[in-house]
Image (cartoon, rainbow, N blue to C red):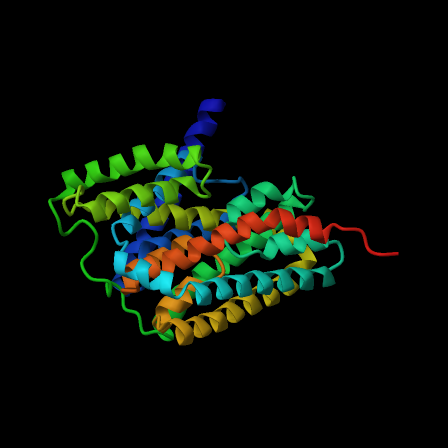
Length: 355
């Protein structure tokens, strides 16, 4: 019986992967930005909502995908852009704080729904670090299941809307970022070595230093150092590996959205959708402020201030010709601010009401 279940599970996973690849090919033919990410998302959504049994991307697969994306983006880091961000640090910091306040207000609005506590609402709406916020929510007094559903509902909406916004509002075309990773440089064997060294050194180092999202940021930092120092000799992550990594990320987001999650959020769904859309629009407004105060392009500022969906942001930036260094720097700064402020927010929101 166990053997039959194992084969059924393998067949289930294989069918989802086939659907994801087919969706990716179709979206690529339609010149959709980030086709592998969006194709994986569509396949994951179909399986998550239609399947009776929960299916997830293995943790090892997610870690590998995050690490490979880190390598891909690390090769795009540009010193001049980092220096420019240093000059505009005040505007970037104020926009980051503005995002924090906006998501906190959104969380407090969730209190309008009976049964959602202030700390649960706030944690469910904090922008950035969905997995980290969910992991710490129970310890800090929030409803872990509700936080997870709200967080991934926000990520889902962002991933779905981002290709549309990039294409319709900002005129992004697929492949506008130039040659695909892996088509330049010394070739794929050197690219594989570059990726292997970046992951093998970056992941344990980031875990040792307790850096958030260690697979992504650890690999990214090492890859950037190798690239900027010239030690990589122009090597880049082979394009097929980057495609697979974004496809797995899209699958993971889609599979997290199940019929059970709909039942969990229940009557709060209409309010949650309205509040999340409000947060997305508000953050787009902060992006406009960032454009006016720093000189960043409208696309760069929009991607830099999007409230979550980091991997979709990186895929769109990579594929749409945006300044990935600027986008990533602002997103990572916000990630640190959100994760570090979460315990303080929980303590403040759980304080007893004055008599």
